[in-house]
Image (cartoon, rainbow, N blue to C red; front, side):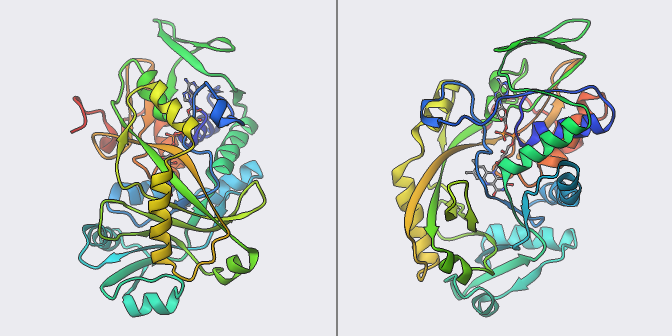
Length: 377
Ligand SMILES: Cc1cc2nc3c(=O)[nH]c(=O)nc-3n(C[C@H](O)[C@H](O)[C@H](O)COP(=O)(O)OP(=O)(O)OC[C@H]3O[C@@H](n4cnc5c(N)ncnc54)[C@H](O)[C@@H]3O)c2cc1C
């Protein structure tokens, strides 16, 4: 397993559980991001929205399969990572996002409540939605800590016998006997390799899935414990407004600094990062202050009564594929990839990892996740 992020650590757990001898190779989170010269990951945070309702059945199914295993992963590892606060999708009732989510909800028979503007205002009085807004609320979902989920998957894999090496892979050689990984901590030999290196996958894989890697800024808004208590019923939220951004918001979460932060994401412009250097420079930058200001204005419109103590931001990246689904496919006889969260790969990473494990172990490639040739359009 190359990459100890959300998908890679999940795949390692599934492979180890199936009885394979597993080597999970990937570095720890860098402690000083601004000065870090190595690779980065997209899971250095405490909040990722988790929900089944989605704009396509593929995402609903992989999310549902993953959510159903959260308790088992927590039990197997002894590491809790899921907060059941509910998830809400809301927007103008004729917005394509709401229409698609409504269609998936119906097709997949999802247990969600439909809330009109009046019901939204009664249930979630801290949000200022418009009179034409419609919401879908899923009570038994919420958010996961991606850091803790990676830790849980890694620990569960380790307990099943996986060896974990905190190294960076520099190159992969395929021979008739197997694959040889050249890393910054020596060489390792394996029968087969699954690459789940997030934004770096294109730059490692002999056959790159040619993802589009976008720079993302997420803003943090600190609240007091009293303000967090007032927001005790706040769900994770995806919402739509007029304009280019696709915003999402997490309720107050206690971060490692001991403080309570809401997080809002959704960039007004997509900036593509073409090279490993550009990806590294972006992470080291810590985010775009213009996007942070845009996001603060958006939050103040959505939650006009919110008492914000301080504002922060972070830089992250999302990886989009040409097929709109993750690419989980074979690259060669002995190498496969599992990558492309399309901005929503955390909640469902356990199932994406399971599918990657299936492919690298010689099983079938899921039909919705094959490579397609050519560039993203
Ligand atoms: C700001 C933001 C908000 C998001 N919000 C949500 C959300 O609310 N809900 C949701 O479901 N998803 C969300 N996502 C998406 C989700 O975080 C990603 O889809 C997910 O992290 C992808 O998992 P991954 O395993 O492909 O990549 P990562 O989690 O990035 O893991 C890749 C790993 O590969 C390692 N690696 C890279 N190069 C090498 C190498 N050469 N050798 C060894 N290891 C290597 C890295 O160190 C990293 O640990 C969000 C993403 C961002 C950026």
